[in-house]
Image (cartoon, rainbow, N blue to C red; front, top):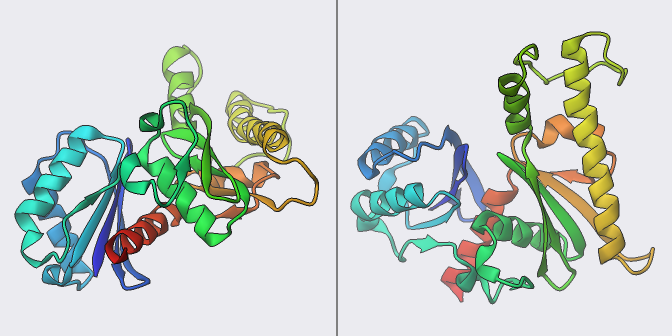
Length: 266
């Protein structure tokens, strides 16, 4: 068994793989103040609840965009899990992935680990030109070629950030639940107008960006091209964005598993 860890700004998502099978998956809030021992207590409990013996963990791979939590996780794994590991803990960095994806950026070190993991996962599912959209704290668009080249992408504020800004920076706009929307775009109340703005607005923005990016990536109409969405808000927005072809909520965990196998078996 091996453990995959995706440390994001809002949530940390972990998964336990038994060979190619995901046998456990957990999503917790990311707390930058967590200590190594606190993480160990939390995950020891989760593993026990799932009936997974901690001593069966033979490998660990971590992708992080939160440096303080990355440090705590590595310390946790070295202190509490290392006795049974067959390989050193793998922490995703650009240089570790150079044989798996070519990063075509002016400064490759700028790209977040999670974005490269998603790109590798999507390309391994289908090696074609594609955009991977991750609906997280920020919404990221990552552009991948049929040769598994990472071209770059787009970053914009996530839905939760926009909702928080609306309610905190305006006197009369409330906190709202956007889990459903009216069939009409024109809102007949403040809440309906806000829901339409977020859901239809983000959907239209996603579609507009995809159309523009596709023009830059695709030279002929017969080229294979697709748009893959992942992240906590993907299912919420996809009904309002017609350009999304596939939703895969487990894309990042799958990417980490692919990378782990390739690094360990090379």
